[in-house]
Image 1 (cartoon, helix red, strand yellow):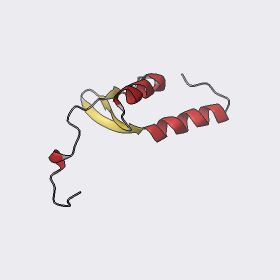
Image 2: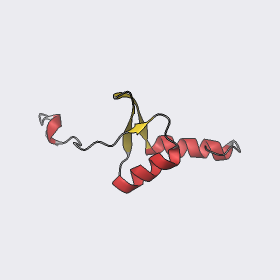
Image 3: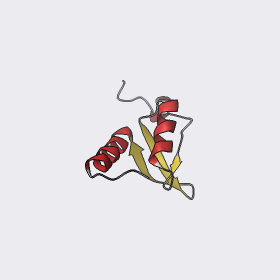
Image 4: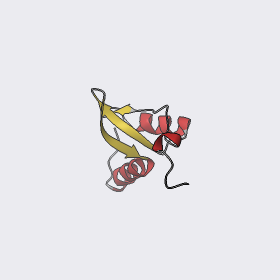
Length: 71
């Protein structure tokens, strides 16, 4: 990667997003389908966060470890 290369040359242009109320199973399915590792979380057209595959794995592991089921 060239250090002076413009971000616009390497960024994703067809960005998938999710809403904060979507369930994790649906988000994981979307990530699998489009081979996405990170996905912006939006509300009212604004990015309010970003969710990673690691975040989902941590949530699932924590839910299993704590004996709770993800909703």
